[in-house]
Length: 232
Ligand code: 5RP
Image 1 (cartoon, rainbow, N blue to C red):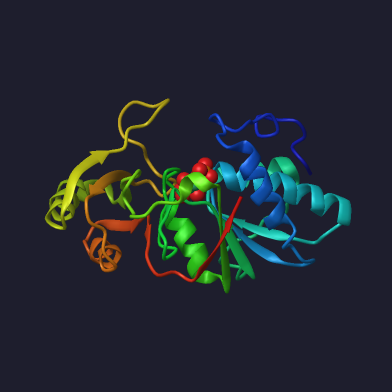
Image 2: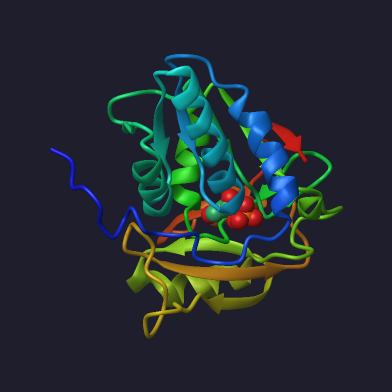
């Protein structure tokens, strides 16, 4: 039985969407990649949201049988609104995944995680045969860390230790991400904190060095992943 009209059906994107036209172009592009019966991993963020709108139209008009695996509650609720069927990684392996990014360097290395969903986003990318990163021009940088810090999801009681170790890796500033609409720090969908760490130098080994700190769940650094970039 369906719930009928409820709080989820009335939800809207929570912030202003910048570069909407560019996002609509890459959204159409990714929607056109869908084939009947695909299982698709879905990242998070406003570009992904816009792409889902285009995908939902194609699914409806062409009666496609698609299942998606969302990386966040935000995207899961969007799929509920749009009537896109969902499954989980426990049950299905994605044929392909698409996601956004905050920064993309000339070697297709990424910073992600402004939306705090990088753990499940990375899990989806690791589980997929193919991944498309959909971006507008504003996401290209010469050097990772130019505009965005590296988000790091941290098991809460390990916060002081992780801060100490991240600073020892060369972070010049480490900030605890605070919530809007709740007092105190953000809690991720996995019940953890996020710290945002600024580095003046991000080399190819930094992702693994961060990940090896006890208490770190995951970081938003994606170095050397086999991803295809689709730009607007
Ligand atoms: C969320 C992400 C997003 O993909 C990234 O922040 C890009 O978002 P947007 O498309 O809104 O610019 O990594 O964790």
